[in-house]
Image 1 (cartoon, rainbow, N blue to C red):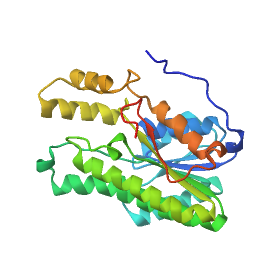
Image 2 (cartoon, rainbow, N blue to C red):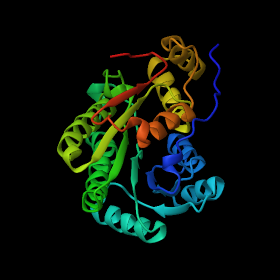
Image 3 (tube, rainbow, N blue to C red):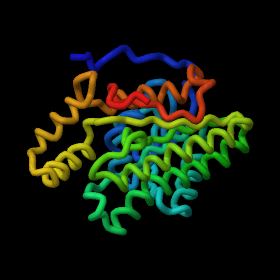
Image 4 (cartoon, rainbow, N blue to C red):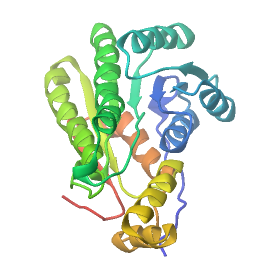
Length: 266
């Protein structure tokens, strides 16, 4: 069994930076917010669930603030970003992590399910990236990290709509990175695998029902597909995000970094 803990790397240059993390109320987003705060970053925790954002902000400390945001709505994103600038006195880093999933066979996906996945996973990334990037260009610096997925690299059965929305995140990130490179702005994304979160627990239940097996069998299958032999933790993803925000990744842009335990290596 591969150990799940390791010494926390130190990135002194991040101390004093200001970050906005969407979907920060739970799961991967909460781990990212906490990992950035440990580096001395002041974090604005964005989430559609105000209470969840407040819980994360209180838990990570370091002057973190909670911002309610619906990433599907341009006006809401613009207002939230203005609140971030006001509360933190600026913004250097955006982590667009907010995401959702539903599960169904491809031939049974409804318009509502398709739209829900694309509205949050794709439009949400577009809006938060565009609004933050305009600010970053004006100030001459900034860094964007988007949360994509293993399902953005290989189409996932029962998640065709989710896969499509996350493939779009990778394409958008690559194009944005090439446009902004000359302005000194970097944009990358991470592609997590089977991460032990509340979202994954729901997906395991859905998949078990659709496949006629138990949730425990579904999770065992996830682990069997993972060469490193365990479920991924939110912290596994968060550590890579922090690296991408740091100067150690200064010559990386337009990348979609797999954080999958070896499930998919291309």
